[in-house]
Length: 415
Image (tube, rainbow, N blue to C red; front, side, top):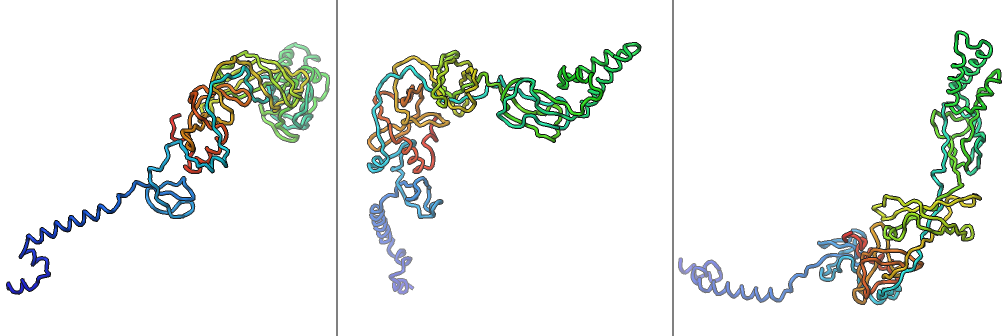
């Protein structure tokens, strides 16, 4: 048996029984060799996977681009930019015409220019509606833009309830004339029937004509209750209308509103009753002086925009709703940081600029703006003197950031 055991020199178990010291030596040697090899393998870098054609794609694991199905490539995470930061090379800066300037202190003028629009004075709008049901027999006014005077005929209506009421009045009036008030008080019946007709929109003159006609007309004419331009016609000949249905709308343009949207940062420079000048380019830059008589008490939380309004007299009806206008308001000149208007990007979340951290590296900055004068806008907060800001090409930088990251630089920022 011993001879057989020693005749198997290459069996590890047999060698372990015979020479355990040799096994220990081999194990230590193997560990040293393994340690030497592992030191030659570089440590695995912390990477993310992106697409060379779509850099906005960022994945934690290898795979294919969800957009173009190309294989993703590994990129060290140490090369990732900070949130709201972008790197541009010299060629991108040159092609994008990216220009920067150092912020300095300056004066903002005493004029605030707002763009606005002329609108109807809603306090001068008149809505004409039916007071009794019936069928429209004839329309005297059937298109918008027509001007009607108070008392002009608008439409004829055939109405069974109204015809019955007209007949009741005519009969009661005739009975009062022929019989008098012996046992039945026909005078009270006449007055009751007269009041009913008046409530249904029948004029005093029409009621008087009922007593003169032997047979009242089956159709009744209704007249305009006010002067104004027709802005809407809601009925047509032959249509059936119910009680209270809108017939048409009239607008009195003797006065008109000039309305403008104002950012909340500009409100401090405007007060109620502030004197302004309204210029109408469509009328050869006609200028009309007025004052702000309304400021919306509710500010839109999404756009941070408010509404101001100026009421203008329109004696010649030359001002029409929809005309664009410029509203020039006076404000006090003061010392402030200013930038070109093109340097500021504004959306529903607020205003931002791109600041240069170092050559080729730009970061987004949230700012608060003030009044605007021509091509200059006031910066109230977010920047300081000495900061370097992109004054040309800010929109291109913003677009490049969205392309590279798949989101706007405003996302993830504290608003």
